[in-house]
Amino acid sequence: MVGNDACVTNVLFFITDQQRADHVGFTGNEILRTPNLDAIAERGMVFDEGWVANPICMPNRSSIMTGRLPSAHGCIFNDRSLDWNANTFVRRFRAAGYRTGLVGKSHLQHGPSRNSVAQVRSSGMLATPHHLQGWDQLENFENYLDGNEPDIEDFYGFDHVEFALEHGSSVLGHHLNWALNRGGRIEDLVVPMTEAAPGLDRSERWWQIYRAPYEPEFHSTTFVAERTIAFIEEAVGQEKPFLAWASFPDPHHPMTPPGAWFDRHNPDDMPVPDSIDDPSDYMPHHLKEAHRRHPRDQRFWVQPCGVGGDHAVVREAISATYGMIEMIDDAIGRVVSTLDRLGQIEDTIIVFTSDHGDMMGEHGLMLKGYMPFRGTQQIPLLISAPKCLPGRTDSLASSMDLGPTLMDLCGIDAYDGIQGVSLAPILDDPSASVRDHVLIEEDFPDFLASVTSTPSKTRTLVTRDTRYTRNSDGHEMMFDTIADRDERHEIASSDQPRRNEILERLTDALIASADAARGTPTDPSYA
Image (cartoon, rainbow, N blue to C red; front, side, top):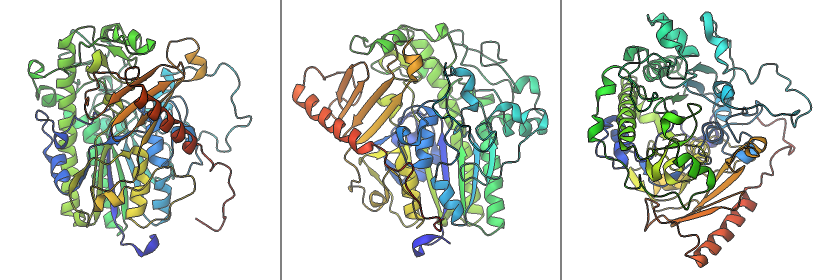
């Protein structure tokens, strides 16, 4: 039963990958066309100060799932899976009688990224293997080749999963078999993440910008929309409340919108960020190196890079990204229309967010990864809930607040160790505040940091008017987020009183963030 005598309410959770906070119409972008998301925003609450717990895929997705910081749930980088026993808000919904379905990108396990990380050069910290053989291999793409699909009865609380395991025009996981069954050609679908990938109208400046070599009907966005609709229809047919997690792999690079979506915008019409040619002299050493690295000089497709003074490559990237986002918006419209058709729209909470952002040319940088700026750390965040008034708020919110918020709204009991807070009071009053800061963690494996210039640990504190970052090398950056929203004037050395105050607040935040939940005794009768 749903707890606290609350009405049973469905949840439809839309999440994209690597979408900037300003890359959607309802946050003020006047070029992007996102009418379906804008319509949801008109009846929901827009959080203009939504921030990540970590600006990397796996850590932040795990923080959304658990309501805990990466340093607490243990998934601090894209090289380790979320512990199989981790409690999640999805597990609580399932225990309350909900159908729970994940369609699209999960990335709670490091299967999709295991070829981009290095193995620890010694034995691991844990002396014994996990009791469940293969628990961390459910997202390995090999499991879904040749028509094979493992039988998954539970995935961190999801009773139904259909994975899309890759980005760009690469099609793997359940997505692959779905596309093949619709008539797709395997030579167009299973492609390398290199310039050898088949593609149409490829950019001369960066191989990662091209038109997908297949029709839109085979793309991941279509897969996520159609299979989410099928899951919702099944749950409603069973007369069960549902939690549907619709996870689009786009607009993460490679930037490969299919068909006419590639032509939605002319690169020549795309404005570049005002800070695109700003110097990197105040940045830490690893960002100075990335700043000089043009996208064509990447050693690996996910390697952070810069612009190298090339405005045209940024215009092309923005144009293709906008096409991907507009295709997602169209898909979201189809899913929401299904709610209306099934009579569920008034009984469904709708969430829209992303796992992190992208620099997209700001400060002369591209992509993400140890780039502690607003571009990667801020995300679009929208919650539309029955009986909650529409509005807009500048109250601080973190990705890890979403699980606690949904449990609160649906009257579902939470669990020990949650570090996020419910945003429900803000849904009733946009002037309300539930937190005075957001702590953002970012970690790079120690044994890799020792042979690169990337610091092993970076911490950022965001307050109502300041964003301060310090890394394990002692480098620091501070910006006035009100007077200098574009973060073009670093002030750590010029405003010592403010720097000392924010450093003290960061110290307090780090003390408060220490996890005390692991290993605590639990009541075996509580489920």
